[in-house]
Image (cartoon, rainbow, N blue to C red):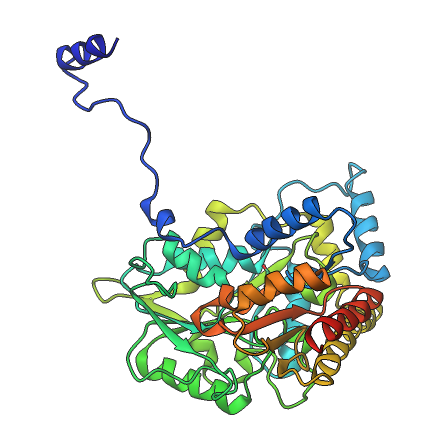
Length: 431
Ligand code: MLT
């Protein structure tokens, strides 16, 4: 058979290549391991299979647990009913999102905070995870990218997948990326780099550390971006958790940011939409990039082109549900929901501090960043906590080399589970 195949190959004038399997994208092979959260899921599933009697409490992935607010459910139901009647049925909507939602976002999330954003600068999508990955498409691959360390792993992994990095070193750092360690010394806020970079990912309130940046710290980044003609990719998915009135919710509260920043927002953690899917990305029309020939190009037009080509919009009922988060009743109910998780965060923080554990975050964010006791590595601590307390968190090293020796606990769970988790943590770690 083999000989016949070769014969065929040499005799066929049009077929010059030896038949082989389709080539894969080699860049995927640079990724160190599976995506962080599925890897945690795998370890937990194995533990549960071996210990079927264990009542495992999950404070790992930041996934909401409480039901959607009634105002949102009501609006969603109403919109579904509209789809049942010929006169109100809707097919494809605008890819960028319906005006009613874009305008509500502008009024409540930006104008109300003095940030000048227009409705057609808002692109509704199905998630910030997708958008923070997809945004790379509109930037040239020779841009220098800066990333805080530790960081939401999607920023790093999508750069690797897109072939923008070299291989990882033994600490898991990819060649070509500029890592900015955020540590207790700099209060987990990355200082502006001394060198030039073109793209910078910032996330505040921060995932994973739960820390926030002040107006002055953000202003330094905007200044840097202006001086270096760089673009800030600002992930504000957790802005609803800010309790300190002095902390900006949006990068656009900083003068000049319209010309240097893209912002990502989500209804996931704010309104409980992790399973519903609705988010948005703001690309101001004043944000300009440059072509290889030196021509100035608005990034808005590129993102619009990408969005309209590769995305068909979020469903009409879901956009109506998201709009309801801004109604008077919706706003009050969403506030109650966020406050519920913030109380969980406080209980975790206080419970751990009580036994002498060092913790950060959890005041303006749903994440508590825990210093692992002694010299224990993040993954060793993960395994011990799972084994001895039947408690799941997220190893800090999964967010980057500088996260080693830390552990993230999420406040997304029922009150009962959070209280029980704190008791178990105290019992196992405080002994
Ligand atoms: C997290 O736990 O870091 C988040 O839930 C991940 C995400 O939002 O995609």
